[in-house]
Length: 228
Image (cartoon, rainbow, N blue to C red; front, side, top):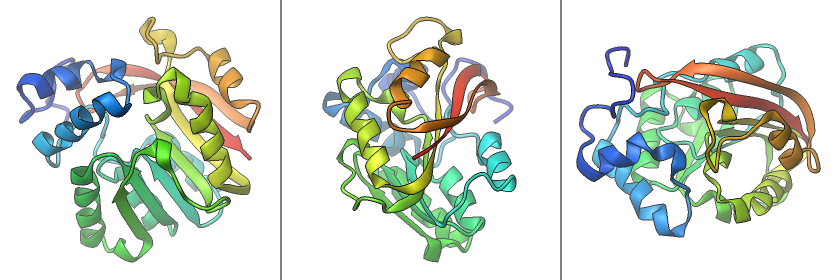
């Protein structure tokens, strides 16, 4: 991935799909855009993709190693190719991964078999706004780039659903775009993150990080670890 040119989509993604990847941070995941997001993975296959580093996120690994993420049942929302979910499975979690793209979860499932984690993973295509899991189904919910694609009118229902599927004392780990990258409908200040979530969760950690993403571009994110 280090050979990718910053700001340019990965090889193998061209035309309209290339344009979508270049401007994905402005594209909401709502009904009118479902097919566009599915097309990204249909055309891109196993990638690479700007949002997939090919390894688990450092902040996730750090928190797991420090014992700050407990329990056994984990939900990976907008799991993509399963990179983070597979790491959790390797660490002993029972992982459910959902993504709107059937192509993405098919690849994630294949990777689970290749890494010997298939018995601890369940990847399936689902819209994160329609999570129908029973209340308290998970001890941990991972959200790497999901919330910041939720349209404004769906943000509260999304947060309420995350809260619902978490067990008492369960934890929610969020990565979302920071407004350090400039104004946009889904670039948030630290105070906005607090305002969104503090009514439903106890915020344990909230910090801003920079990351060189899969396309070589440096982007800024808020990382928040929250507890129900």
